[in-house]
Image 1 (cartoon, helix red, strand yellow):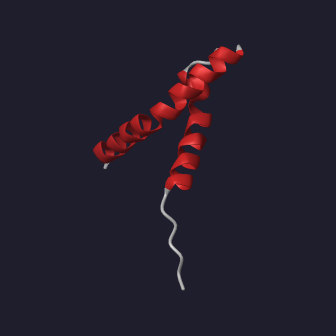
Image 2 (cartoon, helix red, strand yellow):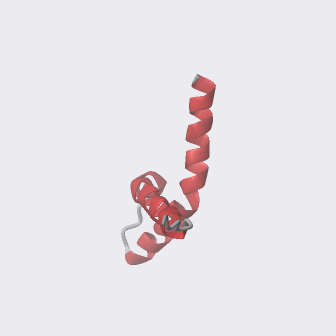
Length: 61
C-alpha cells in the first residue's frame, strides 16, 4: 500500500511538471520569481484544466 502511494505521488509530480515549469518561466518573466513549490498548486490546476479541455467529448443520444 505504501509502495503504491509513493508511486502515485511520483507519477503525479512527473505529470504536473511541464505545466508547473512553464508557469515558473512565465511568472519569472513577470517578476514574481517563484520556485517550484510556490508554483506547484497553480500547476496542478493548469494540468487539470488542460486535461479536461483536451479530452474527447461524448454526446449521448
